[in-house]
Length: 74
Image (tube, rainbow, N blue to C red; front, side, top):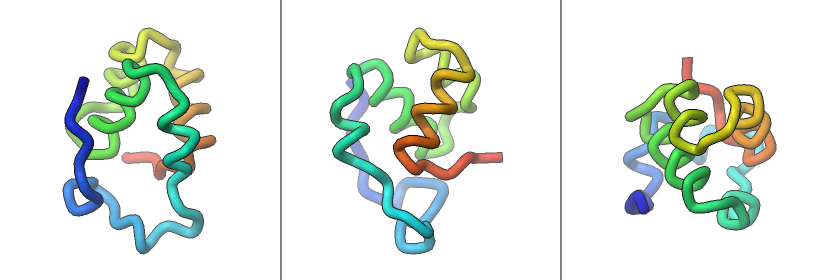
């Protein structure tokens, strides 16, 4: 399991988001998906690599990312 980080380590600032990240939703997801989201939010892996790590399709991962209100990293 990936160590959860504080917002200072993410590539975005949570204070700048229009809507806050839905941490409750994220915590309801399987560990592999949570770990992939954490690494994605840190900017350590791409969305494609995150979907592979979570063992789901790119489209499924992106839908989860959007539902959790995590901004897309381009």
